[in-house]
Image (cartoon, rainbow, N blue to C red):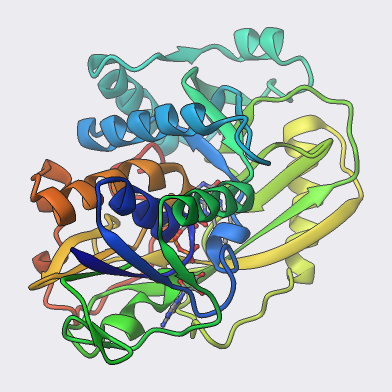
Length: 367
Ligand SMILES: Cc1cc2nc3c(=O)[nH]c(=O)nc-3n(C[C@H](O)[C@H](O)[C@H](O)COP(=O)(O)OP(=O)(O)OC[C@H]3O[C@@H](n4cnc5c(N)ncnc54)[C@H](O)[C@@H]3O)c2cc1C
């Protein structure tokens, strides 16, 4: 079986590798260089803290696969709990956290509500006096998404995949750049709508998010998401990685500002003070694209006969890439069904839906 994979991000490289491991002859097309898209710009925050059982199962499987790969090449997965919290006065988020934690625990996740005092005892550097509600997910960790993607491209090559960088793919039925394949997987991130256009419309909108890394800091923190403030942080390369949520504006995937905005750098000083009572100088800052769908869930599965799509991750594509890729490879090569292929089927939409870009995932912890 000859399969074309379009896109050399975390999803495309892992899928290409998994397809080849199952015996497929695979060609991966990447318009630029491997990891040049969103996977090279992501924060690498990973956790299983999803209220929905299917989301949690997929995240758990992805964490296992990351851990299995840790230590290979330049890729390392570092276990680190994920904390999300609401500050005083934000009653709506307090209620959301409490109800989501209850559902997570019912699904067997190692997640608990903690008091502000308990949070402060475990991580003394955190500002906790105005924390109204906090939860800790123990099954979580972080990784360098670019290192992972490059590792998977290398492993894919070893498994026999032909990786064609600097080769934009043009789709026409099951033909890519004029050659016919038995199946095509489109994992083209922010370009997915454009790539799929010749076969079927898909409702995906790219939007811009931003992150920075600070100077070196001597502070022990969890991976932290302040749901009231709309920012997150985690340790990275001796400093802290600080990121901001959604700018709910559709972007042209070929024409967007890659540098961080001045307002974002200023906002991060405020975020750092709010989280840690100090702010830090900036080593590096950048922007990247995420992708939104009408219901906040991915578009995943068969779009038209033999053409599969895996995109629309709502800012959570890296942490789930190993699980979704495995399911897709099993489906394409062996015809193995999985409930995710139905729950997230791209055919649940007409493709021309008018929708707002909304932060996060439809059914996750921020909901
Ligand atoms: C600042 C930031 C922080 C983030 N933090 C996190 C996080 O902490 N955790 C998390 O899970 N997710 C995070 N994300 C989201 C995450 O980056 C994405 O969900 C994930 O990387 C998507 O991977 P992908 O392989 O689908 O897409 P991409 O990595 O974008 O790969 C798609 C590739 O397709 C290529 N391509 C496009 N068109 C064509 C074509 N015609 N032919 C060939 N190739 C083509 C592109 O060049 C690109 O390399 C973050 C994103 C940003 C920007």
